[in-house]
Amino acid sequence: MSNPLFLDPTVLAQLVVLGVLLGGIYGFVALGLTIIFGVMEVVNVAHGAFTVVGMYTVWYVSNTLGLSPLLGIPAAAVVLFALGVLIQRTAVAPVMDGPESGKFLVTIAVLIILVALVEIQFTATPRQLDVDLGSTGVRGVYVPDGQLYALAVAAVTFAAVWLFLQRTHTGRTIRGTADSRLSAAYVGVDVARVDALTFGLGAGLAGLAGALITFVQPFDPYLGNEYLTIAFVVVVLGGLGSIPGTVVGGLLVGLLHVFGSFYLPGSWNNVLILLVFIAVLLVRPTGLFGGSHD
Image (spheres, rainbow, N blue to C red):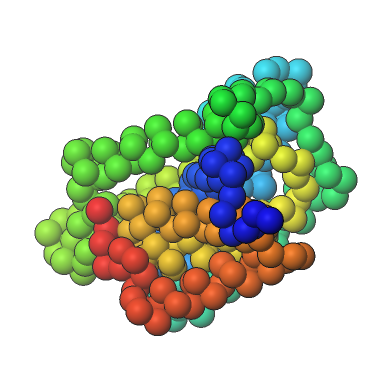
């Protein structure tokens, strides 16, 4: 009798592929969250709602305007960037110098308002794009094309964001502000402008992630809460404010989810993720890449 712990190579490869594809999406969803925290030290609870607005932007472009849903992907990023800047200027900026609880409560209020507006406009009925992207088979390994395309966009976006932060003057200004807001202000950096740009960037990335999710699964106004929970696990596991940590954390959570679902009954895969999460924090309280803003 074969030992179930030792899988057929094809099954093992299938699980790894699905875990990497899922982990790429998880990491991408968490990217905007970790950028906002890394620069502004704001725990943006509204992040999940931003992904939902991105989802329904694609739905609006496709089903209301009658255009290709692919056009909804950049539209979601632009809409959420503008919305993020607006929310930062009107709701977050006034409480930036106040207690942490004030910023936290403001983002909760934004979450509730955005989800309510989406539900009013589109109802709570689950939606699904009428798009069949199919799948690709490679030596018996099934690769869903929707998730593959999402991973490709996520990888390109991760690289673009990293290059932007590392190689451009604006990116270096953002990184400097993340290292020390006070020092940045002393040398003449417009910290308020950096905050608005950062919050808009984080919201735009959340909208882009939400747009890609519509090609992978059905969605409703509350799906963002599920991804918000996963995003928090990813960013804390990888290290708050660390982009490389977000990538590694997302892949780790994706692999744990897929392998846990295969080996364990019911929702015990979620227990496995949390156990690994706790174990990592016991060894490295700041996460795998804690303290790095690279």
